[in-house]
Each structure stands twice: as structure tokens, then as C-alpha cells.
Amino acid sequence: MATTKKPRHRFATLILVTSVTVVPLLPSRLRIEALLAITALCLLVQLCAPKPPASASSKAVSEPYPVQTPASALWLVDGSYYDLQPLMSFHPGGDRILRMSRGKDVSITFRVHHLREQPRTRLQAYAIPISRVTGRIEASTYQYSFGSDGFYATLRERVRSHLEGAGAIAAVRQADAAYLTKVVLSSAVWAVSWWVVVCVPFFSPLAPLACVANALSRMVLTGAGHEADHGVVLPSRPVAQRLLARLGIEGFLSYDVDDWYELHMRHHLDTKTDDDPDENRGARARSFWRLSSATPWRPSHARPRLAQLLAGGLLNVAKSAERADQGRAGCALLWLHLLPLFFQPSRCAGALAVLCSSCAAAYLTLLAFHVNHIQGETEHVGYAPGVDWGAHQLHTTANFDARWGGFFGLSGGLDLQIEHHLFPQLSYDKQRSVAPLVRATAREHGLPYHEFSSLGAGLLAHLRFMDKLGAPLSF
Image (cartoon, rainbow, N blue to C red):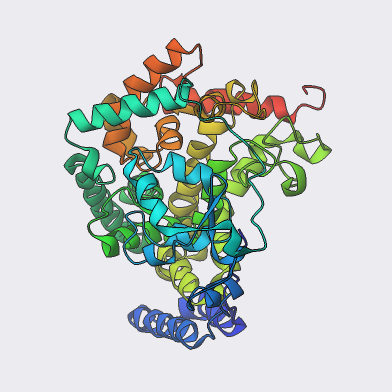
């Protein structure tokens, strides 16, 4: 899936650079007005930006195909072609996943996103005979097994029965009241602590505590944004869910929310393979860190913890600066990351406030994501053609136990990545309710269930593995 390139305007970047250098020199009473004016200019730049040209396939689907239909305008499911354009406006999982997968083989995506058989039955109404298709869609590079007696098929049936018995099968995407309360409270903590971080001098007793609270609440909201981007928080309130996804993904992680979704869906499909965008291997191998034993060692990999600290701590600011010329990203950079620079009594105090809140949260969030996949335990068994889909996810993914003290809040739900990968359509509370079924079924099939006793234990194991990857003779 090719990522749509966003319009770029250097004028917005010039505005932001000027603001960082000039606004702090203004009298304090004028700084808010100046920042609001800069924000309005950045948004105006984005509103006036030319729209990216529509792809050929998106133009094509607006017209009927009485005789022949190009394969690029269709979807391939288990060897058959379907025209899912009519589903765009009322697809339960939203139209984005359909838009981004047009012209692709979506067989795996279709299987793992639907618990019941009704969607497959309804799918037949959109079938296009092969005789009417011009061109072809290449099958997925990685082929998995979904045999009826395999692990995933057995587990899927048990999960479906469990959710039906609990009366939750019709609302699998809706988060429960506890999770929504956690999101609301975390939002309030973030807002209050951010005000303190921005306005209270950094070297006062209150400011460091506010930085800690702000960093932890950012972690919660980033994890919640990840869940919202999957559509499993408030599906009945799509606008609110979209705003939460934008806050976590665009606001705090500084990725375009649609680009992130596209890359993240590829990660789900191709977990720990050469095509996994989260793996540092093959054509995606970067010189500054080594995240897999499949990546050849280089001398620059010898300081893995320093690489993680720099990449994680500065990633959000760097990504925002990279995308600042898109207008909205520039506003996020100003208001959600760099604001202390404008109101702290000195540049040094402002920089420390940014490092201890925004940058610290980005570093800890990166580690939380890495705990789930970058482990010695998840490196033992790689992809093999025909492997059971669920078995591959168990071999390559790890959880951490976050139940004590409500600690899951610090990750916003990233602690159950095994269940999330197996059933990405389930909200966090549904993931937790089916976790015992996953453990039991894995045990019956002789499969591992990687779980650390806490986030701290997972971090220690991850850092030890990173040290091993950084050693030249380890792999």
C-alpha cells in the first residue's frame, strides 16, 4: 500500500522557526496572542494547500463497470474478486481500511477482523466474476494457514462463543466504562500538568512532579490513541474516536494518523518479517540501531541503549518538525511539545521542561511498544510458509502483566498485544476477557504464551536483548 504524500509548504516551517526564535523575546502578555496568530497562519496554510491528486483506482470506482472491471479497483479475498465500494459509507470498521486496501489481497485482513460468518455470507453480494476482471491482484507475499483444526480456528470459535454468551458479540469494538473513565481522567491530568509544566518555573518544587504526571498521562493517551485508531474505543461516536486517535498518534507521536494506520496494519499482517515496517531489517535497516538478529551487525549498533534514548526521546519533536510544513503538525509541535520554551523564565528551563515531559513520554512509549516484539523469546521461531496465523502471532508477540494497581493505564492498553494481534477488532476489556481462553488454547496446542510479570520486567528483558543485539559476535 503506497502512502499518500501530503502537501508540503515551507512557509509554515518558516513561520514556526521564526516563532521559536522571536516569540520568547516578546513581553509575556503578548506571547499568547502571538502564538494564536501563528497557529491561525499555520492552519490557513493547510486549508489553502492543494489537495493531492486522486489515484487512478479511486477515480475509476466512481463509475459503473457494465462489462470489464480493472483489478486495481477491486479487493481480493481468498482468490475471488469483490467490489466493496458500496460498503464504504456503512462498513462497521470504517471506510479507511477499505480505501487503503483497494487493489490488494485482503484475505488475511478479512479473516482476522471478523469473528462471525455473516460478513463472509454478505460478501457474496459484491462478488465480481473473474471473466469481468482485467488485470490481476498479486497474492500476499506471506501465506498462513487457517485450517479448521488449527490453533487459530479453534481459538476463534471459542472466543466467538464466549462473547456471545456474555452478550458482547454485537458490541465487540465498544470500550467499557472503566476504560473510558481512564481516558477522561488521563486527559484531565495531562491538561492540568501541562499547564504547570508550561507556566510554573521548572526549578520550583511543583514543576518536576508535573513533568512526571504529564509524561505518564501522555503514555496513557498515546496507548488510547492507538486503540482509537483501530476503532475499538467509541465506534458509536466516530468523531470523538477520531479526535482521540489524532491526539495520541498525531499530537503526541507526531505521525500522520492515516500514514500510521497504513504502516501499523502492515505490521499486523507481516509481524516480524522482512516486510514488517516496525522491524529494522532488509531495505528498512537503519544504521543507528539493530532491532532484529536478521539485521547484519554494524559498528554503529554497538550503543543500542543510547540509540533508543535518542531515537525515542527526540522522535516526537523530530517528526513534528519534519511535518511542520503541513500546517496542523506545526500547530501540534508548538502547543503539545515546545510550549514551555515560550513561557519558562529561561531557554534552559524551557528545554528541560520539554525533555522531562514530552521527550520522556516518547521514550517510555517507544520502550512499551518494543517490549511487545523486540525480545529474545519472540526471535526463536520466524515465519514459515503455511504456519498457522495464530501460532505465528504467539511466537512473535509478548504481553506484560499490568493488572496490579491499575498499571495498564500507563500504556493505555498496550499490555495485551497478543490478544490485540489475534483479534484487532476487540476493545481492551474484551481482549482481557478472552486472554484466559488464549492461554488455555495455546497450552493445548503446545504453543508459547509470552508474558512478563510487569512492564518493568519486560523492559529489563528487552534492554538485555538489545545489549545482545549490539554485541558484534552475538548473532
